[in-house]
Length: 197
Image 1: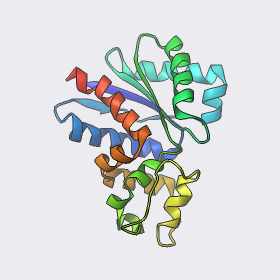
Image 2: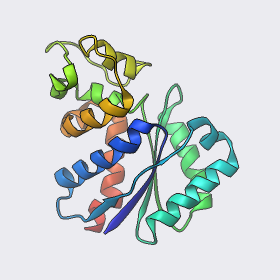
Image 3: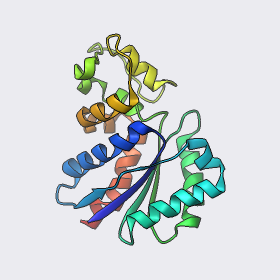
Image 4: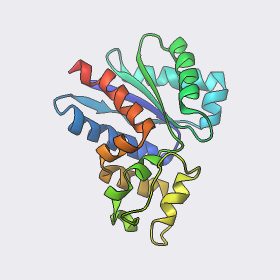
């Protein structure tokens, strides 16, 4: 059993990430036994910029994951370069928990960009609609939440309610094909789950 202790920044991700990890397990490694623990929620800026907060949350995640577990840090890239910031966070985190499997994934630009990447698979879910031939570039919109809101037939986008619902429905292959940062998550999954089953 692989315990996955994750660090996220939003209330929606606390609910949605375990759903996504279970779906990855079913589709990519159906024989893997995983236990996605309730994610640890942090304030992004404090986590990144305050060493004491950074260390405290990493040690908590390491303790929760156990010796054979995996610590996954999943944050929004916002306006930062996902690759550069991800590498920096990884190196800093590795210094605090060298004894744990560790991954850092930054959704470019927000977690919701993965919904945009698989938008056609979400047609009709929670009043979401997009035109069949609409050109969609998932990782360009700065405000992915706003993009989702505009496509929800006048409904207000609620991160806490909608993020888990969309996560349960999105086509993972579409997200993989259309989002580089989602492919990064899948690559980390291959490294830390697939190779251990």
